[in-house]
Image (cartoon, rainbow, N blue to C red):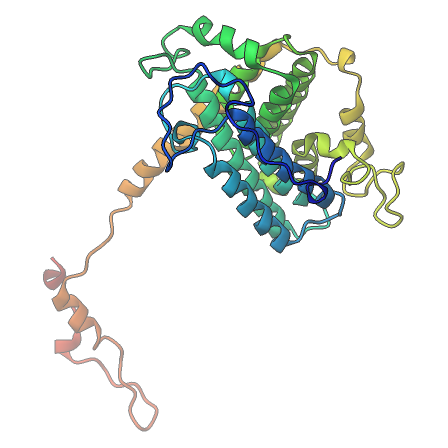
Length: 362
């Protein structure tokens, strides 16, 4: 890969990239920039990231420096491409955003290794889930029609399906898949459904998307069985963490499932992961029949319904617990309830004025 330190070349201008068709009012304070500029800035950050992920663990200071770098890249995007923006988003405009979001996810996911303390691994899952929620927000905006309504909720699924498929590539398929894994892990089912609907729209347009779908269905079924078994917290289960790491186990530099804890060499399975579970990761995809994306959507919909039922029951339980307020007169008298101890060590009886009557309470 070319090192940026070896060359000094200015970033491309809108004229260089052929961006002459848009009627843009250019001012000195807000110069127009080509979408290629955003992509180049993100790729420059990714080239530095690839050097860091070769290490077993990315230090905290390195994580913070990359977060600042990617924040600077995000500020280069137009206002309607920001995370907090609203309104419809053209699917053909999201590739640079997906490159940036995927770089963030890969950065933090790298520290999901067993070499990290359990409390820190939970933070890694939280960070990855937050990044996935941002991606789900971009995807949801791609599903909006011109009036700002969700095409899916209005029955206009085909309205955004065509542009989305034409803009989709293998990179988008795998990133949405990674986001779906972490959103399911953190019970963010609403955002997970957005990601799965996007994957379902892409369908078999990209062969890798089918493989991602089979993997995702296996994961949600395994996650559902863990929840039924009462595993809590589920993110502490080593099998679930290994599955949610996804293609992180496909590299000898980052995998921990296939390495022995003592030798650290690939080939022998880790003591953190049983042989049966490891076999599930390498099972041939043709041997595993799946129910297409509808099965995944059905499982996530049921999990979301159960989650809403629990949330509705919790406020009702709190309402039943009515706190008992004790009158101030009773509180003052309760101070004298304790029987005083005489100097000789004998307990002196309570006087009649120190006793609380039922009438006082009423």
